[in-house]
Image (cartoon, rainbow, N blue to C red; front, side):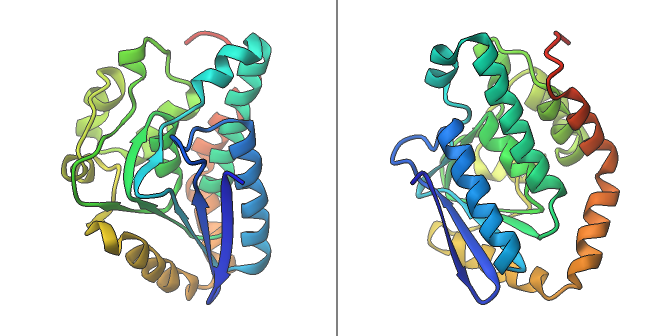
Length: 226
């Protein structure tokens, strides 16, 4: 299984680990959605983590190469639906990032409410400008919401790749912790958020993000060039 879920003390700990790059493909998306089903039914907050050295390397480029155009668009839309579910879902979501987060990996970070990153040397960033890919609507909208405006051009148009400290300044992270403390810190933050009135949290989260969620939802299935 490329993603697993454990529930303890009202916190759902969802771990992405495919043994490789934690690439986002149909299998990973299905596993994450199954884990989120469990979390939403049994928990009051979520911690989403990768493994040491790797949060997610982004979409599975091998899958794009083999799926054909129609399949690739469906995978993109499925990824966007996952981001919508995290960003607009009812529960607090805390990211525990213990390694590289690239492209779709950082868009997943954007979709989490609070992002805890490991101190150290690894790469964070949207590399579409480097790899010659046009940014999907969901990437632009989430970046506009979550990144510091001063970093938007550098991060998204120029494809700058950050280290953890500069990623904190740019808005990819909300706080840093030592590598061996990242998951513990994320669980502690999730525990605090789980004590907030759940229905109010869910309503406020969806309400304040409505314009972004609506723009992303409207882009699904509309594969025109921007």
